[in-house]
Image (cartoon, rainbow, N blue to C red):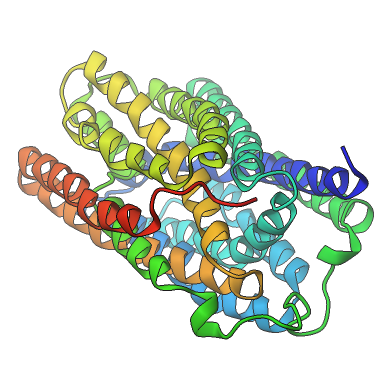
Length: 397
């Protein structure tokens, strides 16, 4: 491995470890926030609203922070600020009011919006020397190790000490996240990735904004928005589990850990497939999404587990090749902006979908299932048009 490839791999590895510890915090919390909000008096509609608003903050405002990243070049300031906002989740241990708990959950999501465009731009830049699918696959796999460990530890603490003990534990991985960020920034970041002057990440002969974000990107967003709107959030699924008692509460975070394990394995697999076969791998998203709602909203524990496995697989595909695809479509000088736009649309779609699914669930579980299935199937239309236009070519790395 050349020196430049080694430096790139090291940066991806360390950013993956930062994501690992951070995921122990927010995925551990996310595995129990649905039932916790129910305990505080929330309805399914309220859970869907909190989840959706949180995702709008997490995704919808990334267009702003992506633009700020590209304009300022201050990647690390935004990355550190965003990661430190996960401190709001351990604070849930001291909160017993629905409005305050909802605010803290949403605040953490804003932190994700601040850090993610800058972090993804660094990962994409580094991954250009080892393969975009491989780079994002490695990062996502490490990320999901934390997403597995966090819910499992939360499940253990929930069983022995209740919700307050589970949230208090989250202070430990918060400290680990901060320590890794300091190390990565000081000792492991190649000079080409360090904060620089505005527009320092642009090539002198970079293309215009209109050519840097091509037409295929906007068609891609149409596919993403329809697909994500029909993708049931885990908070709604966990609410269903709690309400119907399909399984005991203590197994909810364990199911979430199972989904994150599937996510990690799928990330490595589809990253490899993406580098070899290109955008056609995106077909896996709608095909695997269609049966998720019928399975996860059933009253059978067996069907629920199968649905959770599919849910985790789709999440792994989304987190890996949805991001890698953008790096293959958009010029480097506009990459953080493109990630910001992508994630803003993603968040708006998830807000709309979460609110509709939550409301339909309150009225009729069957209607919520039908809504999810129809949107997952419909997302095939813009995807097929996009794939036809690209000629199904594999991306360059």
